[in-house]
Length: 240
Image 1: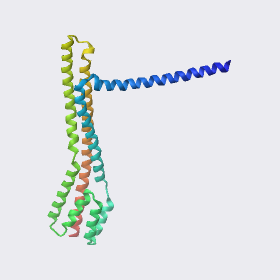
Image 2: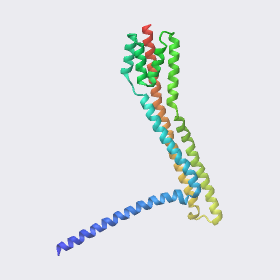
Image 3: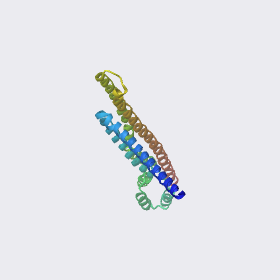
Image 4: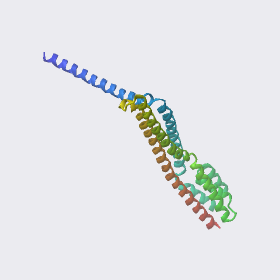
């Protein structure tokens, strides 16, 4: 008898756990469906028209952030062995070997050094100017596509603000049709107003933060280029 009671109790407990899991899954599904319904059903075509550009802007921001992050990090890797090898080649007069090393290294610093090595034998001022020109060109290449993040940071909140205006317009239009201000009447306009504003601000803030973070990394690269340029010029002056 006791065994039967225990078996019934265990069966009831298992059934309760299963029912709890089913209820939790149903609740999660309901939340997901509610969010989808808010964005694409209750908000209407206005919500859809505004959310698609904001979503596309978010994809652009993510893609160009990581694309520039990889490029800048690759350019900022210090390589003491490279510069020491360049020194030895110049001291030994092996300029062809130094040029070959620069070509095989393929970094902003190596391209600067290659230009300076090509100018060896000419006046110091001319060598320095050519190195600076290459450095500016390398920095401009690293800055490529970073402006897109700045554009996204500016446009996404503006689209959200347009959604706010359109939501308010929809609220007053729905009130004029229903001739009352019940929450059900103004709900769809509020959905448009709040969802688009939140989405635009989130995308804009993330793009803005990513843009300035990349600028911080780029400043470090600029410092490395300037430092390498000074060391190279000191090396040539000692040789002279």
